Image (cartoon, rainbow, N blue to C red; front, side):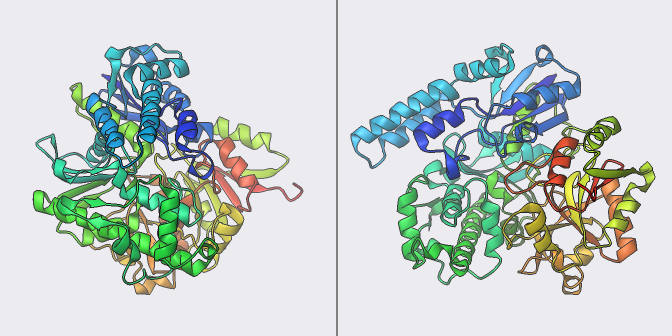
Length: 594
C-alpha cells in the first residue's frame, strides 16, 4: 500500500489575509502553515520534506506541490500508484457546527456575527470542504484526485500519530497542544491496545488557546507570532519571572479537568496589549526596554510551565500509564518539556522531531497506512529529505570557481579533517547526506563551531546568523558522553533537541559557547547508528581538543529556511562570514580576490 500524507492549502494565505489580517508580522497566523509531504510504502516511511526547503519561503503555507513531486520522485512512484492521499485536516460536520456555535454564542453585535458567519462560509467553501481540497490538489498538481482516494485526518490526531509511531508505538498517555487545530487547541488522552481514547472533558477550545496566547505575547515583544516563540523562551533565561506572575494572576484562569480560560479571543490583539501594558506597568515605548522584555518573557515562560503542568496533573489522575507523548507546536518549548517530565510521575516523555506542524504530513500518512492495514514500520530517523551526490556538489563548486577554492578529501578523511579545522575559532557549514525533517538542524544541514570559545556565540549571531545577541546555541554530543556533561534527570537521550538540561559545573568553563546564560543547554544526542559521520566527527574532535561536544545550529540566516541543496548552502556561505564549507567530501573556502 502506498500512502501520501500532506499538509497545506493553496488559497489559505489569500483568504486569511483578506478576512483575518494574516499579513506582515501576522502572516503565519493561518491554517496549513509549514506545508509538507510524506510518503509511506508498505508501512515504511521512505521520504518526507517540507515545502519551505524547496520553495525557499520560510514557514510557507502554500500548497506543497514541490514537496509532493519530490517524495514521489524519490521513491520512484507516480500519482496513479498512490492508494491513499491523506490530508492533515478534517472539517467534519461536527467541527463546522462547533465553529458556527462559537460565533453565534459570542458576546458580539448581531451584524458582526453575520459578518463572521459569511467569512466562515466562504472559507469553508473555498478551502476546508472536501470539494475544495480535491480541487486544490488538482489545480496544483494536475492530478485529478478522487474522493475515494482522499482521507482527511483530524489535525490533532495527525500530531498524535506522528509522536506515537516515531516513538515506537506501544501504550502511552498524551497531550497535544498547539495554536488551533480545526477548532480545538489542546487534547489529552491515552493510547491502549492500539486504541486512542480522548478525555473529552479535558479538551480546550481555540478561543482559550495557550499557544495562541503565547503568540500574542511574542508579538507584544516585537517578534513574529507563530514563528519566533523560541526567541521568547531564550529571552526568558535572562531573568526571573515577576512575583506574583501577572499573567497567572490577571490573564489565565485554571479550571477543572486540566482546563483553563483566557479573557479575550487570541485575535483581540489591542485588548491584550492594553492589558499587558497595565499588568507589566509599561507603555508602548517601555516595551523596547531590555529589562521589561526579559520580565515579560520570563512571565510568559512561567505561564506556559504552570498551565501545562496543570494539564499533566489532570492527565496523571486519569491515566496510570508510565510513558507520556507531548506533541503540537507548544511541545517545541524545550525548557518546559524538561520541567514537565521531572515534575511528573511519568518515567518517560517523548517529543518527536515532527512535533510542530511540519510533522502532521507524516502523522496523516501513519494514520491512513494503519487504517489501510499496513502497520507503520518506523526507524525514527529524521533524515528523510533530499540528498545530493558528488556530481551535483562539483557543479556548484565549478559554478563559483572565481569566488571559492576547494579541495577534495578521501571519504575516510572527512571527519578527521573537519575536526582539525574546528580546533580554531571558526564557523563551518556542514552539508551531508539527506536533509533532516522538522524545525531543528540535526547534523546534516548544520553550522558547527567549537564551544570552548566564550565569544563564539556572539560571532555566529552577528556575523553569520544575523540575529538577536541574546539567542543561545545548542550542542551536539555523543549519547554515551552526554550524562557526563549534562544533568539529564530521567532522560537518557535527546536526539531531536526537544529537551534542555543543566550543564554540569565542571564543564561550564569548557563549553561556554554552548551554555546559555542560565547554565543550561538544549542538547542533541547522537549514536553511531543515527548519524555515523557526525558521530565520527565528534569522536575525532574530542580526541583533538578534549571538548566533548560541538555547537550545532541550523544552516541558514535569520528569516530563511534551513538550506536543502548545494546551491542553497553555497548561497548562505557566500553571503555570511562563515569560514569553511564542507559539502560532502569537499572543503571550500572563499577566494582571497573575490
